[in-house]
Image (tube, rainbow, N blue to C red; front, top):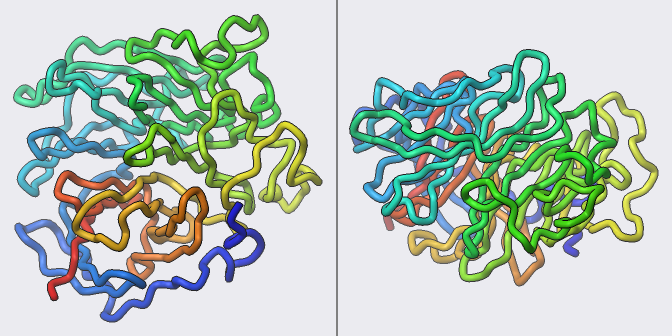
Length: 390
């Protein structure tokens, strides 16, 4: 286990602190190709270009085969960006959802066979006022008509609970065709993360139609929900498949400190709230223990918390020295963080985009090999990191 960022701000930032060479990037609206400042990092100089702006708290994004982008807005809209322009009207046909607090429309993902079936999947806060929980639906995207057809809910958290926090909400397909859905403990119900009898504080694994894979770790147990793949999770908002492997990594929010990066393993208990490297927001002790038998240790953790969100492994050609590294957003510390990887160890960390003073909600690699980033704001933006000209 790497020990780079375990106890102090210095370790959380590490030796790869990013150096900004020019003034703060101007916040410009998309008017065709944008002129961008050049930034220096440890291994690459890069430009930051605004692809689109005017998004209301964008949360997740996915690229379509034709190059268009799907972008979710937390307040319940699914948007399309094509040819560098944000369509003025959102996609219609979404189900009713509970918008408020951290809830609303969350992540979006394409079916692995999208080009044949046109299916997309999206996570959202469903239920009714006063009782909500994460749900996942799939639908056929009619891009010409800008609508969803054949919408069906394929998974719904049980039980629904009051409160507006800790929905999780990230989606990740595995090479075997199954779908992982990250969930949260719903904040006021953290003790339920140690229970297998409900979905709170877990990551679940389902088939694309919502049925339960027969090899899920708790199938057949009367005291367990069969969709559960891991438990002891607080609020997982980042998950990514490592390129060239079948291994999935994820990260989760800690309280005050104790954000974690983990490797996904079937049936594993990740410890929340029995073990944690964080404390309550009030300063109260949640647990005296940071480790215990039968509970997994993180690959790294952050103290103080950076509030990680969104996550991808970079595998493109545009930034060859970044290949194999993890990129994740930081909400509280307002940066894009690069984790330099060596096998399953994090050997260095670097903060990018710090001069923007923006909450980074998501990051994905585009089909062009560039990195695309969402800023979480009432006037949120899609940013593209591209190599600086030599």
